[in-house]
Image 1 (spheres, helix red, strand yellow):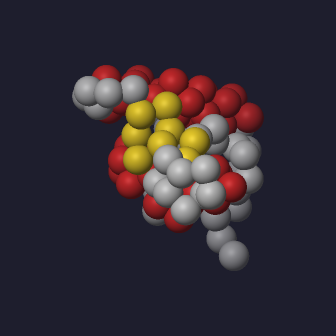
Image 2 (cartoon, one colour; image 1 turned 120 degrees about the vertical axis):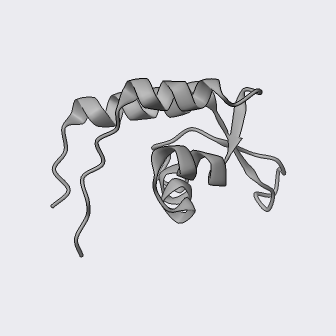
Length: 85
């Protein structure tokens, strides 16, 4: 399996987050901003790498991710300097 390196431009991510009028994003919105598949975002949530909360207590609802969590996640991943190849 080949992984592509995820190097985000923090400034552009913050600009995209600023366009969101409320404080939370859906999985699809987060995936669009991070330019990854929505399933990748869900995997990060399931692995507790990306903090999120579910709209239902039984876990069958929709995931919501705080804008601040996205910004911190990007900053942390960029600082780790991981080579995914």
